[in-house]
Length: 176
Image (cartoon, rainbow, N blue to C red; front, side, top):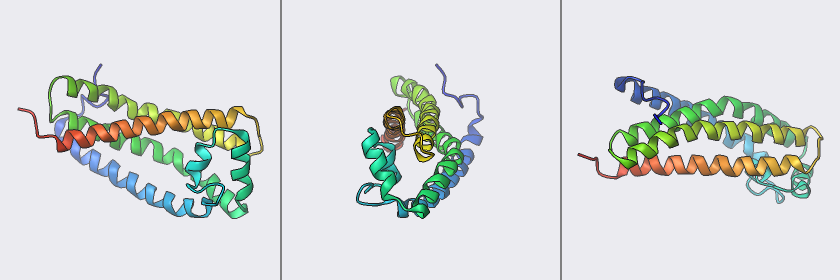
């Protein structure tokens, strides 16, 4: 399997990576602002607590801990997240490609898989958001927090794996 951007000319990779990383970091900064009112005793990690609630009782407790302003911020954040997904997936996938290009053999082959994993993470993020939206609009069925937690776990796992790979690829001395 080839990396999703293997055919992108080498001289375009770094500029596209830096641009997508800059947009990713800007949107992430917006999320920091949006998440502040979502941090309650029921949701100490803000929206991440909601994403990983896993049970209807826990998700309902989190929703009940949010006032109307917080719910508005959470709803807006779900919308912004759909803008965030392609940028973080692009930044991570390109970061992985750049790291893989520094090494040969099995390490580079793993990078091809993880490059796709960044986009798979974004797909899981979209399903997670749909599940959270269902809960926020009053569809309080056990399936939604279960599905959101499963998707969030897979998403975070893929993103952390990709980030670790990219960092190792950059910090590990270049292959010959």
